[in-house]
Length: 410
Image (cartoon, rainbow, N blue to C red; front, side, top):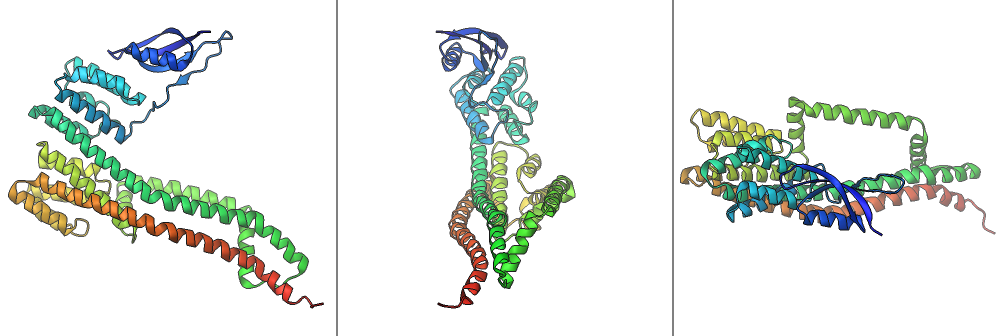
């Protein structure tokens, strides 16, 4: 028996349309709406009791990820290169993307372009989706008549940035998960296992060695009301830390500290260098002025220490000095390899090519570091977890061994 569904969709012009449609299932109704050229927003089945349950289309989200925007940008570049107008390409793209928020924004951008706005100006209305890098490069492509080429280059840049983000997350996720499991295991032992042994020790009047007393004291602390106070203090500390990091001075100090740890510091440094080199190469190749490019790269570098070095370079370039000379003065955060490649690029007129080589080098360094880090941390953390649990168990059984020694043999 066919059911009746209320739907909300957007047509090819981006206009919101509401109506009713009959179908055997929600998936069939959604498919029929897509065949009709609509972008489904929501589908609500009607029941005879007038019960309404809004079904959100799977895959749609209110947040646009960098990887999703990169794919959409590549598709837009391909369609424009094939001879389609920007308006027609945006219409098709808005019906193809799975992200609801991105589809809505693309429809709004298409309306603005249709009413005479440039693509860069229309995208600038949505800074949460399109950052300054995107807008500036699109603007350069429009001015130079090479929008398709610039969009393709922009898509490649965003794809590399998304890949870098994925690598750094993969490097951080494994130790975070293992450490969380370790905390849960030790907490469970202190809360459930140690109190049982404490009762046994009390009944046996056993003499407790030092390590066992330490474990019992830790268990008492975890079970006491003071642990709630400690957790509250930790939460307040995290909130205050985040507020401090949100300030300019706090952000500078925090980003400087992130570069110091022995293992993760160099990794974060390499990620920032790869991101800054690739972004600056794309901007230079697109014809964006170097001073404006450095402003944009400073925003996307991901580390305020490197951003400050780029801003100092911008000031020197404005005074007539070369970028290589200015970067050389920040050798504590800009390696000599980068400075030398920039110097060669400035002398040969191939700055974008040299910067791309720098980005490729640090991309490889990040990949190798992540691989080595994962292979090293996996056995190390496993050994630490096993040793910690083993030590705790041994501390609990030490009094039992001492008690057994004093039992007279038959």
